[in-house]
View 1 (tube, rainbow, N blue to C red):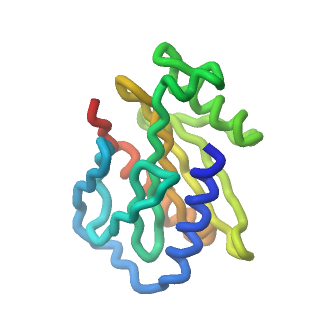
View 2: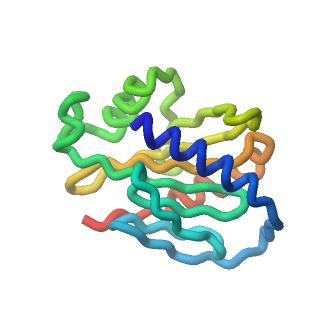
Length: 164
């Protein structure tokens, strides 16, 4: 779980360094990778990372998804009978974080901020459960864009579908 956070931070930095324009009237598109589906703005690019199950990005945001099968979570007392809240709390405990677990429109998530190479980033991290695993998704953008992306991240989070 810690490796996933590091990967998100590195990707977010890479995303920011690319620069470019952002059009708020972009059409929506469904993206799919390794059983993870999400509808977001057109123009996202899929990237392969060893530390994530799926990664999509454009010049302003990074979205990662990490599938954690129940069998690998038993060491942190999470299993198929655990709730989303149980899993989220295990993620927070494993990362020694005290972020507040929130719920909006049926999405269970936590928010956090990190500074990477002198740049401040904002993350919204919803959790999901499928038949065989929990999923941790991270939406990331520069902290200065938090107010612009919070509602967008929630909107995108509501479109997530996991193949069982």
